[in-house]
Length: 130
Image (tube, rainbow, N blue to C red):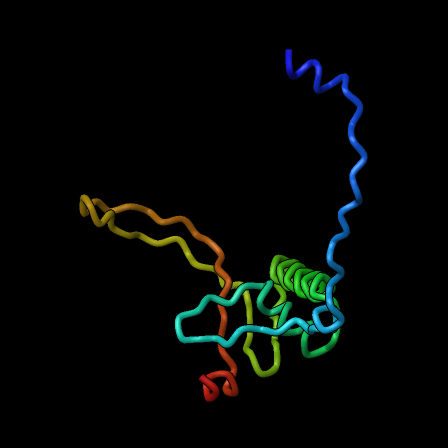
C-alpha cells in the first residue's frame, strides 16, 4: 500500500545537484605512460597512451592508428609478403613441411601435418638495444 501511495504522490522539487566541473589542470593533463619494469606486459593500449602523449593526439586516435597498422601487417603476411620494419626486424611467413613426430605420453609415432608460421627475425639495432 505504501508503494502505491508513493507512486501517486507528486514528486517534490529539489534543487538541481551540480556536478563539480573538472579543474583546468585536470583538463590540461596529458596522458602519460607508466614506467616499465622487467616482466611487465605491454598492451596495445599502453603503446597508444605513450604515442598519444608524445604526439599530442587523442588516445582513441592512437589506438585506431595502431589497430589499422596491425591489420595492414596481418593482411600483408596473409598474402605472403615479407615485412621489414627498420630498427625492429623482419616478419615473414615460413612453411613447415609435414614430418613424423612422437606422442610424448605414449611414445607412438604420429604424422604432423604441414603448416605455416609467422617468423620474426630481430634487427641488429634491436639486438644491441636489448
